[in-house]
Length: 90
Image (cartoon, rainbow, N blue to C red; front, side, top):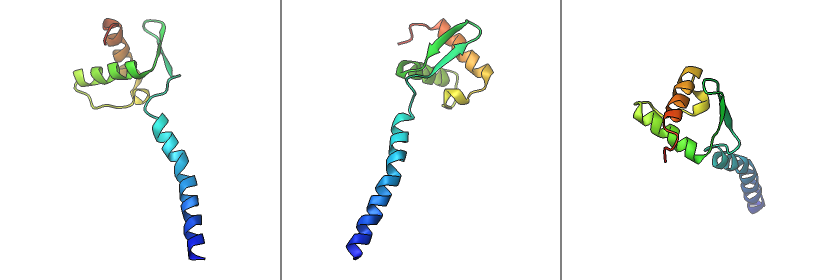
């Protein structure tokens, strides 16, 4: 009887933990995310390369990393201006 309760508890724990593990794995960056740059009137697709460029920009500008979609519009625009000045970054 006690083994049955333990097995049931482990099954419940695994079923609750699985969605969290999946979320954590997919949250690093979204392959389908794209942003519109109003100043340059173009779209930018967010991928690993763009994420690396953004992290470089943040470091170069002495900023702590904040997820790009949490930046205010002015700072996002500053990033896209930098990105257009550095189109071949990596």
